Length: 191
Image (cartoon, rainbow, N blue to C red):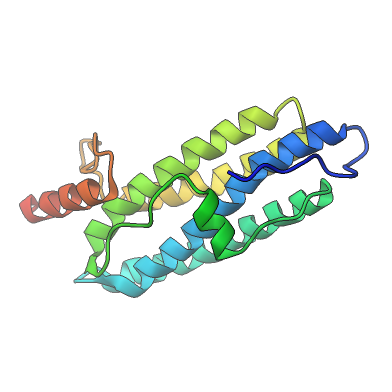
């Protein structure tokens, strides 16, 4: 992650140091959500199979909502006196994760992989919300609002992966590829 100095100014009631620390937390959320929006569009374009249209159409509202979250974070960074880095180069050089690993695939496989993606995004978003709680409750509130949407979207995804008994076909999987394979295998076993 690139280091960023404290802003020259920030919002009233916060020190420049607090503003800088909050900006750094938001910077990675900006990258993660930009990446998520692109990943969701990638899936939208590469999903195939009998559930194509359901997944294809389910993803567009998610893309739109995530892009809205990106804009809110970028505007909050600017409000705090920072400069949002929304370029692909900044995202790639500063992120700590690899590109989405599934190309053209069955709907259920993409949904399995997206479950892992959402789990990572949500866990990191929660950590960021906790990190800024004492620094800036306004930023924390924004992140909590984002979490509501992100958790709802993951529930939409998981509804396709869950058995009637409440077991997720992706349970215990750590990578997108493993989760995609497990979801695909489970779908083959269903009558």
